Amino acid sequence: MIIADPVCYSLNSIAMGDVIAAAPILKYAVNTFHKNTDYKILVRPYYYDIFKSFIPDDKIADQGQPFTCVVPWQIRYLNTPRSTNARITSMHMHLSTFASIQFLNRIIPPNHMRYLKLPDVDVSHFNIDFSKAVIIIVTYRDEVRKIPFETVSGIAEYVKKKGFIPVYIGRVDDSAIWKDSPFKLSFDKLPDGIDLLNKTSILEMASIMSRSKVVVGMDSGPIHVAGTTSVPIVCGFTNVAPEHRIPIRDKGIFIPVVPDLECSHCQSRWFLNYHDFGFCYFKHYDCIKQMSSSRFIKALEHLI
Image (tube, rainbow, N blue to C red; front, side):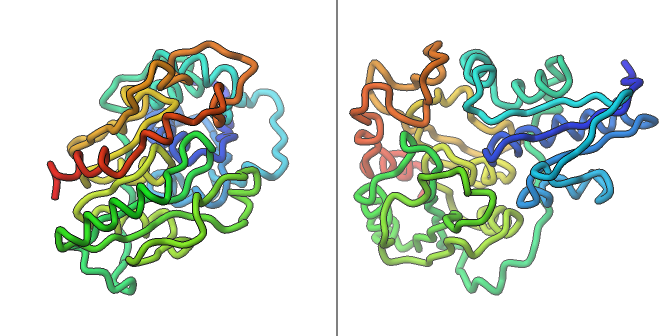
């Protein structure tokens, strides 16, 4: 099939995981449908580096700026994951499949949904012994995906006892990418270790992760950055079922950590148009309370 009209693909999302999952879909579209047809990618500047390996600079623009789409141009959206359509679709399909349907109105071949490897960059200036580095992700957007301080502290102590180094990573500044994000860091002080909060770009984050022993944390944007590498991942899932969020990649161990609750994975299982799944429907947040360090350590024991 050939797309006759020029298309503007708008990634109207602050969710890093959604954007990373959309990247292989856009690459497929560019290589398959736009050999002779114009296109434009609208995305927040923080995410430009994800696309620069296969999209020329003149085809990328800031999603936050006005863009006039006139005939014969089409415009196709990837909306925020809190939209009704995203919630409905996530009950049935992997995040990448969801992106392919929104952008291309079809499910593309699975081999084209693999997360794209991000360009490797120099990270020697961080002075980290990567042979001993265990990356712990501590920043989250949604209240229902926060990680308790006691959990992070317990994981860090276990890592140090095993002779490894906890490295904390994430982004909690007040830049435009986070302006709509009230939940950033679950606690004010980190346990002893290497603090890389707000100190890495996306490409630096991916390069640090690819060199490390393992990445551990809750389902979040940085987990999907780790999914662009082959690093082993231990990931906690609360409101979304792991089978809907595990990154598609050529190789790499992925161990999910899940709560033991009847209401767990609510966003994947329920059909509630009036509820924001960034919050607990019952307001008890028991799924977060069950994300204990012992559950993560049990998974880490298989890796380190």
